Amino acid sequence: MSRDNSYLIGNKFAKGSGRNRTSFKKRHKPWNRGLGGLRLSPATEFKKGHITSPPLPVGTIRQRKDKNGKMRNFIKIAIPNKWRELSHVCWKQAFGFLPGDVVHHINGNLIDDRLTNLIAIPRQDHPRYHSRWGLNKFTVDDLRKYLARYQSPHITYPEFTETL
Image (cartoon, rainbow, N blue to C red; front, side, top):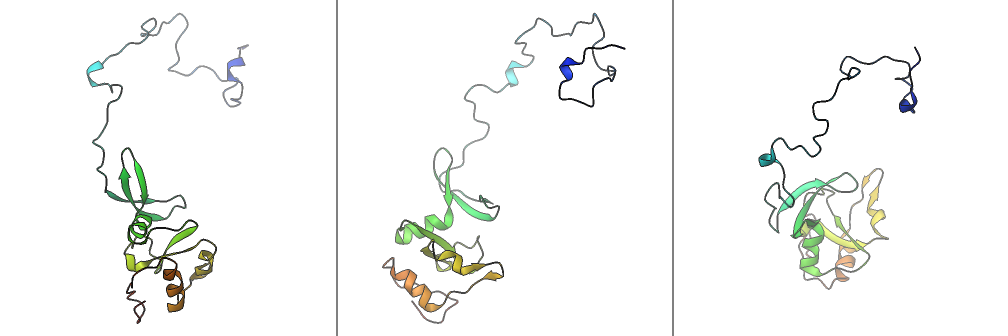
């Protein structure tokens, strides 16, 4: 059996095997030959510019995975499809934002975006509160130091007995 296997380059497993049951037999013509651009159901096809579902309104909050694979809350801030992390939006609305800062969840729950659970800290200080053994605790002095950078009003953190 001498068969031209040149079209099987890269497919080592198919070389030397015979035709399968469903392949076209010799001198058989496919049913759609010469019917280029055949459209069997134009009424149900997607049209150019067709929107499959109504877009979500601005302000919609969704839970999804971030780039690190952790679940977070995201909020839609503009059309079309401009989403930001809800924790960043909450902090920025309340205090503004300094470049180079990271919004940190104090209790470690990334879904809990209450303002009393958020603190913005410099990116260089952020690894100090994370370790492979768990989440390191903030002290009252740490919170006071980081809040002072934002000239923030007094916030009550329920985990701490003092009002900062």
